[in-house]
Amino acid sequence: MTEKIIKIGNVAIEKTAALAPMASVADRAYREICKKYGASYTVSEMISSKGLCYGDNKTKELCTVTDEQRPMALQIFGEDPYFMGEAAKRLEEFSPDIIDINMGCPVPKIVGNGSGSALMKDVKRAEEIVKAAVRSAACPVTVKIRAGWDDESINAVEFAKVMEQSGAAAITVHGRTRMQFYSGKSDRNIIRQVKEAVSVPVIGNGDIECGKDALEMYEQTGCDLVMIGRGSYGRPWIFEEVKNYLENKKETQPKSLTEKMEIMLLHIRLICKYNGEAQGMKEARKNVAWYVKGLPGAAAIRGRCAYLNTYHDLEELVGEILKNGERV
Image (cartoon, rainbow, N blue to C red; front, side, top):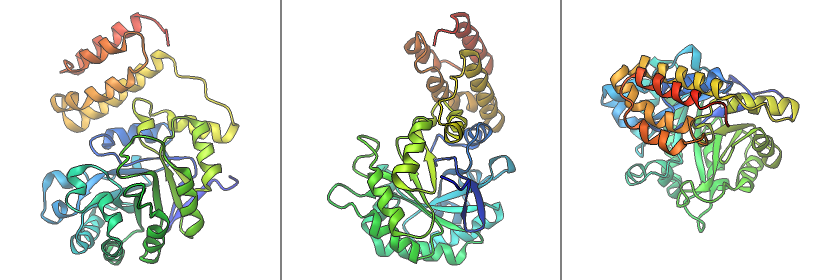
């Protein structure tokens, strides 16, 4: 790992760790807090290509790109090459650095429409989608895939080659099959094989929980960038830890309870800022539950999360948590 920067098209990204696109999780507030704590690259939640083309206001809200989040990709999904091409064109008004195409989502309602990881069973359609998006886009187009559909159809290497030939500027590989969802282990051998098979940058995704995991991903796969998803839940500072570990080969001093609570409060303030307090606190509940994981009495605290209706409620809860002391 001598190089410190990778390039996707003309977009320079620090070779530390990126934040994965996660529907209903990695919203604007989540991306900004992760960027503040060292994420080198962020990707939006999934954006429906048809929703964007039909002018759906909720879909458009997902397309906000701010300087605080850059370099940033907007991720689109869909099964129709025409709509995917049109969506890539329409995203130009939001000025993303990159457009990412989701071919890895395992969720039944996405797969059931022929989108997400279902496209790994239809290489020809996936090829047409990438070509349409690349023709229409004003920025680099990337693709996020899985190892394959199931254990009997692991085709990431062949699939990635077609994506590269179709114009993809980079490929992200989650080392699980669709049928695994998020169970079992992410297969780093698949990521390594994809890296060896294509000449565009490859981003490795799956099971990164600490700086050591990130370094091992780089060393074992040869990937160009590491991407973190669930490992960031309630721990946006994991990106800072990864960067420090890659530089010093040492784990970072753990955050104190006070520091964790301060970061959580900042995160929830951002959620309320972008969604309003009433809706924001509903969105915040799952995040608070992630932040308190592992604390003394965490189960009882998580039970109270369902009743957080105002930011003041959260401040009171944090006061009680801190009163119990720094026993972490």
